[in-house]
Image 1 (cartoon, rainbow, N blue to C red):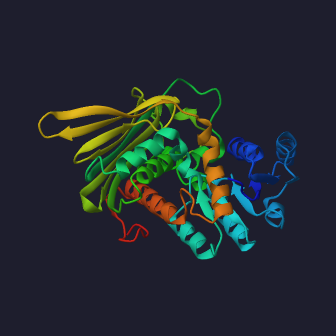
Image 2: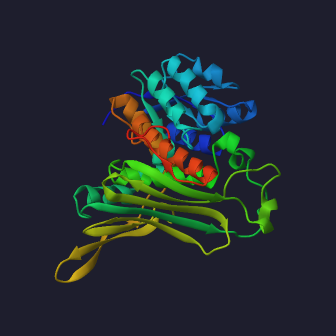
Image 3: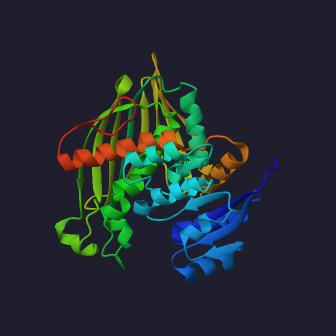
Length: 360
């Protein structure tokens, strides 16, 4: 399909920003119009390396560039929403990195300011993998029956003292909105809710979170306050439950499980790497019990993790369609995230409004 080239600018030339810049430079229907970074040398080098039309040392200069139609904001969470609002006010479409926001109210502000522009979020990354589409179709065909449980349990063991501490943004809640739950939980939730058609309506949540174990507390710089382990039980409408667990630097063996269980069958998934994987289904039969089958297997192109959200965003802009994760989906995800953190801080269950409002 021949598409009109979308002129994209990328704000942030760090690790994630460069993934977007590279993807934009390689796509036939995207023109890499400009890049920006507070580190002017990083902006200049990125522009030279990937052939950007212009580079800026300030985000405001790129946002004021009338030739840029759409922007990617690969900047820390605590400054991203205000930057997105500035971009929308300048008439630009916006793709935001993860975590989505500091609180759900920021998503609502974006909704109010959106107008006719496309607003998309990068939490959708892992749904662009080939296995995810096969799993989504399997569920949409009704093969699982009525949904009962969505499950994520991913724990990464401590592998010894890190060669260098994590970046500042990664370990300070005031900058990032949280730790491992905000960083990776948003992918897990987007993946599971997206595969099941965004039908889940959370009603209440109980969660707990912990930081580094005392024996390894010096892995992070002084003043770090982000969690490294979180778990939650999320009760949803229609008698559906989501159970969640995510940890890093764990005193436990590695576990990586994503699962969707229904009344008539289940799917065992693997959201992340390695690229070579098998997605298995179990089906219930009255006379013979449970049988197993393969929904998808192969060696998928993992580059879609890096480029999928950007390419989907650009196509949404060019074709006027909704992105994989837009504002409505982001509000649901961020509302769940807010409730998880509120419950963990309060040490008590948190109820969620009927329309995905702020935890009450």
